[in-house]
Image 1: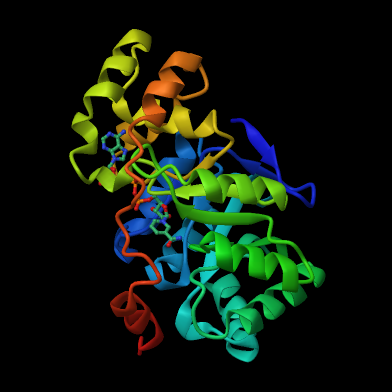
Image 2 (image 1 turned 90 degrees about the horizontal axis):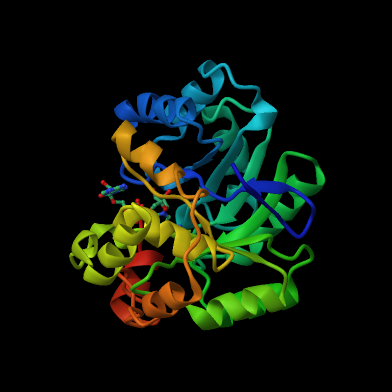
Length: 279
Ligand code: NAD
């Protein structure tokens, strides 16, 4: 496994295992499988409802806790200082750990500055090794970078060959924040796994479309957390450190950018109302 070093010196695996939409009853097995094939970083969230399964796997996998890198995210309905603070304790309990490696604000809605203050406090108390944000568009990212006390170490955003987020990456670099891609395989949407350019490039290296996509992101200094429940694909998604895409391949993949992603943008009023009205 290769690592990036976050702005506070903490090392984070470049490839992790995401558990979005892994049903709670399957989470323990899937995470144990992922760890058994070599994953050391697991990306969960309060709203995924599978922190317990992740926690059970962490407790039972036989790998020392300090070799694992566990991420969770504070959900909108736990927004604001007091609720966020309580939710951090609850997440640690569910994850069966006395510290979280990376804690993120899941979405910039509700009182996320209050949320972030609770996270800064947890960080200072040693309950969290790194803090950051997720789904922060450049405007929100610049704003929190200016008005926080601890610069986010990570911004986790939708990012893949169809949605390359060049400006978000530039500004993350400027403020010394690591970009992490969610949906690094475009969530398989828009016939991603039939993409002819990625297929053709992959054939040159004996690699799959998934591997080419992940490699493209890694070569752009982006951390990736692909999700699958199949152990063979878990392995495949880790085998991305034994080849390098040429400059020409990188440029061809850059041309696949469609400038929009799968998730509805936050400035869409329907989306915003959905988030602020969550029960
Ligand atoms: P993804 O891009 O990882 O795609 C997952 C899909 O690709 C699944 O259908 C899976 O079966 C398929 N797949 C995976 N590996 C494959 C392979 N080698 N060959 C063929 N098919 C393969 O999408 P995702 O799960 O949405 O994103 C990854 C992780 O990012 C999530 O699990 C979650 O941890 C995180 N995430 C975060 C947010 C956020 O708001 N912060 C949102 C979505 C996802």
